[in-house]
Length: 341
Image 1 (cartoon, rainbow, N blue to C red):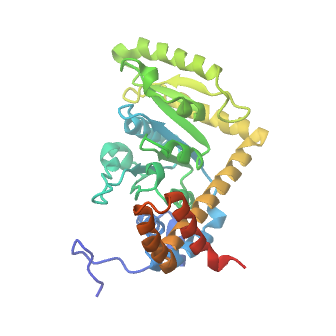
Image 2 (cartoon, rainbow, N blue to C red):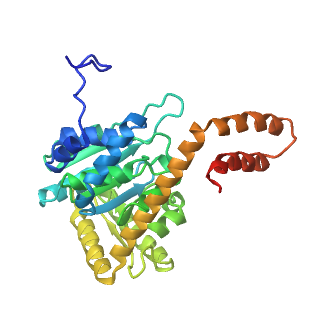
Image 3 (tube, rainbow, N blue to C red):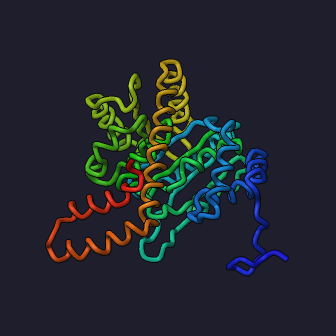
């Protein structure tokens, strides 16, 4: 008899890495969901299975267009993603949406409401929505999003949409793992330019002014022209590419096809110039650094020697006998000492 889970229902039988790989490649959504949970797990027991699974899926990676989508709260990210996703699915694509919800630092819980906010898209047979808690990762971006992208590619999804929470460093992190970075901008809210950070505009390969419908059409066009002028004076986000500003109405469905046309144009031109491959290589290097840093931090947290050093040196810092910088250097030296010749 299977053990019971927290909700009283039988827990699924454990799967091997080969079981996971077969299920993911065959496009089984239930196995894909379990595989994503596996790679997101912080359990040591799951780590070896996750590592073997990702190795088995190596031949199936890099088979999608990865699109990062960001924008300030209220810009309509979920509404746009749903309309955009349905448009792509109806055109024959398979779309995976990785929407990262902020995790409470107190309770550890997250909203995980993206399937509710994208109800129509979640019911489409060619779409898959995965809301994942950030787990406190930098900028709200899930720690294992890079591996989740690979899992979705192996499952046959050829367009991966990664939605940021729209705050902090999440935009930088998402841009480092995607091919095309799309900024959604909102008009009709007073001084629109005040709500957009210059750094985010500089990262965008394309900008879309949302909610261009009803009484807001004229204002949206005016704002689009203003943003286009700003981009003219900025260094291109991607070498050899001139970022464009479009406008759309997700509710009416206008302008959605133009957004995809822009991304297709980007892929064709960047593939021809070699920049597409260069960007993929950059994604790999960034991912390698992130994973290495994660393992180093985990090693420090689990180190008894580091724990003892923190305990001892903490009293000295609190007493004003040495600075945090000095104490941190000693802690790091304690951790690195076994690795030194």
